[in-house]
Image (cartoon, rainbow, N blue to C red):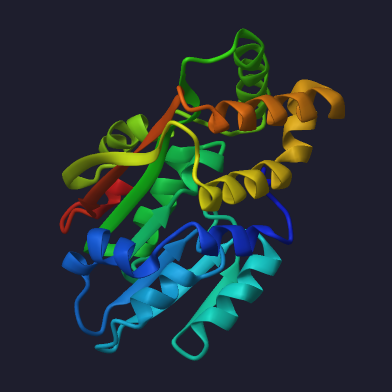
Length: 267
């Protein structure tokens, strides 16, 4: 599996676009208990894993990422509070039932076989343990009004990245995946993620510009030339700068438990 945003700047980009304490408070605090062994699948630079470890109470955190430079950054951010390893989430190097809680945030959209990844999470989470899946739906795709040429290029980017395993609709599929993997007590929440009404503010504009620069090789491959990729990025930034446009996406959060009995159903 190749991460479509692979770049030495990606760890910094991921760190700057999230408030780790807020996300852990919103999605994980209710499930954390003293002494837990926690897995962050797709940990990136490890800022969320570090926020979990900072809860203390004997909680141990292990991060997993497919990129060596992000793993190195995660180890630095975790310090002595946890560890990070380089691995594919579909083939985790851990024993069955090794963790009490596992979560992945904005990672499954890049995995060609989401169900295989979730089944592997089920394998390493103990019976009765908790899994939290948090993914986008509609990234890049929901814009109004949109220029015809931008829509044409955007369709090409989405089609080309889909061929390489990216799924911009993955959020809406998580509930069904959880059911197919045998998970129980499934709770589904949805919230705004990207929401840009009118001209984008300078801080978010800089984040989007970096995102597009990191994604340039992927867009070039999808559209077939550097020139078309440059045109796409230029038109999208113009769209974000306009005072009359709306760009949005949502995030789905699916929280479920590995069945305490008959746990093999979730594997």
